[in-house]
Length: 252
Ligand code: PGA
Image (cartoon, rainbow, N blue to C red; front, side, top):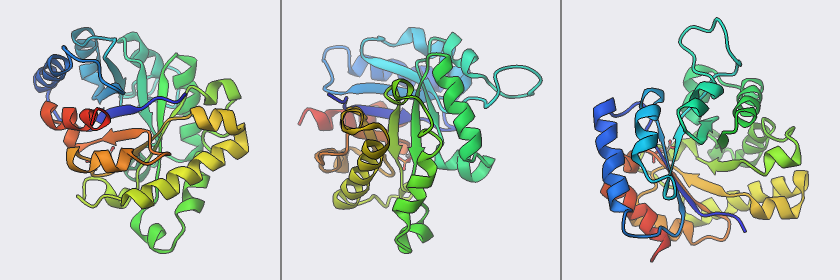
């Protein structure tokens, strides 16, 4: 059966010291309970090596927010998938809309990032999602299908390791959340696209997270949908209590 997952995306927030405090608080908050979902925190690169040993690996997985599309070499400022893995991190967010929009990441670049992440034992959290104009033109399925091409040339074995995240760009950091019905509709579409490409069994086992202004107050109704398997959380992941509130949506 597929997993329920709540993953935090810290983005470019928190100094190392602040990040350590947040990771410790979250670890503490989960110390005496068994969350009913997998919990992941994706942090800036420079936090990874300090944070991975601080959290209970049975409760909190740690991931990066990006990795390079090249293996190694003269690429000043880049961080490779092998480097991420060497910190003890297990996950990497790839294809986030901010990377696509501000850093020109396209289908081909993302294909390469996904392959390198998998080759280095990382689990990609692969994001798709449309911008507002595309949603208004009812093009969301077309857009998401094109974005999925980055992962649809993987072998069945590799694809089955992925976590997918649907994040409508118009809902990210805007306070505007997709309605549970809107989320379910497109999650079901994504699952059907996976089924078409890899078969029903793989599709049924793929976790598809919702992201975009998800918080403790709306998580429960979003996660109650059959095809929404958890959330990728930005703003509400920056405080232990609000992030814990989202994890608790699976307990209620
Ligand atoms: P948000 O961000 O929760 O702040 O909307 C989600 C994301 O971009 O992953």
